Structures are given as C-alpha cells and as structure tokens.
Amino acid sequence: MSDLIRRDPRAEWIARNRLHPLHAAMQTQQIQWMGPNGVVRKNPHAAAAGFIGPAGIKRIDRSGVQQGGGGQRQRGSAEVQLPLHVVEQPAFVIAVVPDMVGGRLSGHDKDLLGLARQLAGKDGAVLAVVFGESKESAFDSAGVDRLLLLEGDEYAGYAPEQRVLALRAVESQFSPRHWLLPDSRSGGGELGRRLAASLGERPATRVWQIRDGQCSGRAGAGREDIVQPAPRLILAAAECAEPVSESRHEARTLELGAQVVRNLPRIEDLGSVAVDPAQIPMAEAEFILSGGNGVTDWALFHRAAVALGATEGASRVAVDDGHMPRARQVGATGTWVTARVYLAVGISGAIQHLQGIGACDKVVAVNLDPGCDMIKRADLAVISDSAAILQALIERVEAHRNGGKRDAA
Image 1 (cartoon, one colour):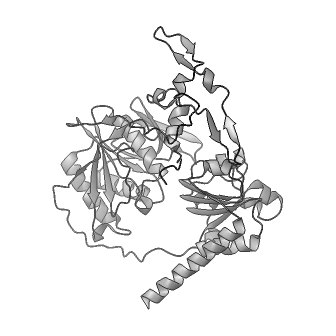
Image 2 (cartoon, one colour):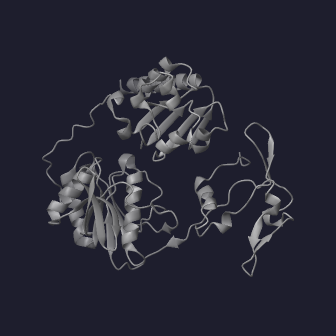
Image 3 (cartoon, one colour):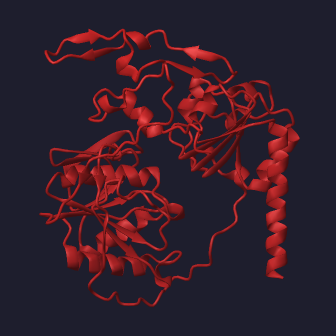
C-alpha cells in the first residue's frame, strides 16, 4: 500500500500557480510515467527544463540533474507545509458564526472566513463561534485564529433564541470589531437578523464585497448594489471573498467565561420534514445523482435515486437523447449546482459540465474510462460498470435500512 501514488489537489494547484509562495518548491517534473491504458509516457521537455541562475537569467539544464536525475519516476507528492500565522495578542477580534451544515464548513462558510481574514489583517484575530457538534478538522487552514465551541442540547436543532443569548455573551467578553454571518437559508440569515435586533445594530445584508471600508450589497432582486460604510454586523453572500489558501492559523480553542442563561424556548423544534428529492430544485439540492451517456439502464438509475434520496440530474448528452427532461441538465448550458455531494454516473466530463459542478464540495465519479475528465475532477473515482455500481448501492442502502429497523425493534 505504501507504493500507491495518491493525488494531492492542493499541491497540484500550487504547482500551477506561479504567484504562490510555494510554487518553486513544487516544480518536480516527471520524466516518464504509466498512462491509464498501461502505455509508458515520456515528457520530451523534462530534460530541457529551465531554471533561474544567480544573475536572474533563465538557463537550460539538459543533463536532467534539475529533475532528480536518471529518468527515475518521482513517487508521491511533496508535502506542502504552509506558513503558520500566530497572533498572540490581537488588537481586535472579527467574530464569524458559520452555518456548519452537517457539522462541517461549507463553501459559503469558507468564503466568509476569507472575508474575515481581510478585515482582520495582520493585527486582528478571526474568532469562529461554532454551535453544536463539530466534525470539521481544518479550521486552521480555513483562517481561524480562535475557536469557540458551544456544545449542548440547548443549541441542538432550531434554537435561534438560545444562540442569540450565547452570542450576547460573546459580545460582552470579546467585543468584536465586526460580526460576520452568512446570509443564507441554512440559519445564518435569520440568526444574523435576530442578533442585529438584540444588539441594536443595523446590519448590511447580501454583502458581496468589502473594500476600503465600504461594503457592497445586492438589492432590487440582484439588479443593483447598495454601497455604504461597513457596519459592525455584516450578513455576507456566497463568494464574498476568496477562501484562505496560503497560510495556516492557530485555531486556538477558547472558552466562554460567563455562564449563558438557559432560555425557555417559545419555539418547539419538531425535526426535519421529509421532502421529495424530485421536487427540490437542482440549484438548491445537497445530494445529486447525475447520469450521462454511460448509463445503460435508466430504470435502475431512477430506482437508485429513490433509494439514495438524491435529486436527479443529467448531462447534456443524456438530455438530448431524451432520457431526462431539459430542466435536469447540469452544466454551463443547464443549471449550475452547489451540491455537497455530486455523484456522476457514466459522465465523461465535458468542459461545460465541469463548469456547472465547480462549486460542489465532493464529486464522486463512476465510469469505465479511467482517463476521462470527470475521473480527473472527482474526489473519489470508481472504475466499473454503472449498472453494477447502482445495483450494489441499492442493495447496500436497503440492507442498512432493514438492519436499522431490526435493531430498533
């Protein structure tokens, strides 16, 4: 198992980005490698790779020394150690309350932390306030200097009043210069407005940019912007800033000094309401099962979507062939999706389709061609027949559900 070559998408991105401070350390070219079809490929330019000499002039090295010598394939990827940013005595604090859907940072949350880092600069610290159980293990690479975990049954489920009381305690203890919450339907939008009313602050909503002390927010159904001085409480939209990618942060765990008063809830949380995945718009779906030209049994595909509880999608080829309606087409010429899990079955990965799934958190691809673009894009790839995989998924899901019912009985 130690000889397996594993991809490091972050290292690959750094190697492509010439402006990244670690770009030079990632320049390790391969002389030859084994292609997906078992054919040995060679890089004709590797032996003539250039380097910058002491006088700043590019030199050509034809000996192969710069590439590690001798045509030996370099196994594995270099471990990238990002610089650690530590703020011992911050001059001020920027408080961020992420949604943490499923206990993990979403893409919207990471954009929000990137915006907080811009506001904090070198002297400030980003404080992340997280409610409930957290499954996230990458707060440091997301830009968090201080981490406050507020766990307990009182914060579970829908409990905005109790959370506002906790945020009032954070306000008293840390006095943040700015409060940042996601303007989302996952709870951040409502919590931010409740907190603004409690603190007596007038928030800026749907903010997509902050520059030179001025924030720009969408208005008029997205047709115009409202530009105003950045207030203390900001409700930011998705893609409000670039996520942190070039530094690590301490993510030092803190504790709340004051005891939060237990609120008598006036709202009873009855739990989640079951919704038919077929009725969920693809742009809002969290789990999408998408089929392409490689799907040979569409009846089995539909059964798998029902068993998995996934929203159905399709490639343009599948739609053009009449297997799926036009409203289910994913891609630049169809619908741009932001699912947390995107399961692509039998999709080769045209550039328009890859553009449409660019904001998905995790992409799983099932395909017979190990060299297709969708396999390269996927976080997890399965090289097998689509019908066999779909049937196996249905059987596993049914066995899990039946086992759970027996255990409950």
